[in-house]
Length: 336
Figure: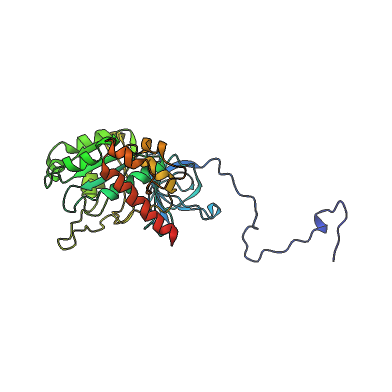
């Protein structure tokens, strides 16, 4: 074995030739301090469409980011070809910290967490008043996800030409959630889009809802015609809609008034990632009633103070039923 003295010169060092002709590997990662700032607009099979200043570019995630994935709404650092020309590909080298995260799982038994959108200010929960019928428990689950992820909820009721909104609005009246009621005719020919747009001004709003509730129709009424998406229909037999939106997409509102993120229609909204002790925070009409609950109360036991709270008229019994059904679903998962 050859040994070197304390002060070897270059002739004493033997260098193994690089047969591939490329640069030797190093553990020193570049800092990319000159990376341009961008926003992820959509993700499709490993390719991320991003907005850098006024240019739309296509990029891929750098290997140095490891398993960390960028999602729609992420603020990222990008290097490489930022011209936006056809067939060019840039590289995402940094993902900035997130101010909010909308997450869900496929169901309550699925441990795999899916990040739907990052850095959104608001979650618009789109629900049809008919065709398909409204599902209040789905709304409750979306509310839980919104509060858990740091988003403000907005209730958007569509197809008011088929059924009145009074009963559903009464169910959520005590929550003080802003809401908008629309009909398809108003969206296509009236000023309903302006009413909805007023709730979105200056914000990044993620739209979520069952397939067939009119979510994409609503988004199309809000954005310029050249950015509109395909609209599907409700199956007359099953009462369910088709998935016309297959990936989340961020779209700018006219005059830079904000952003809307159209997400794929969902048939379930799992909450595996949410701590059950935080679920009550999504029910502010019930939360004050827990002050007299026994320690570590599950809110579904004989000594729970919420029963007296509801009996005294502080909240709608349907809200307590919805909370307990949600908690019972999680308890079944934990017991499996």
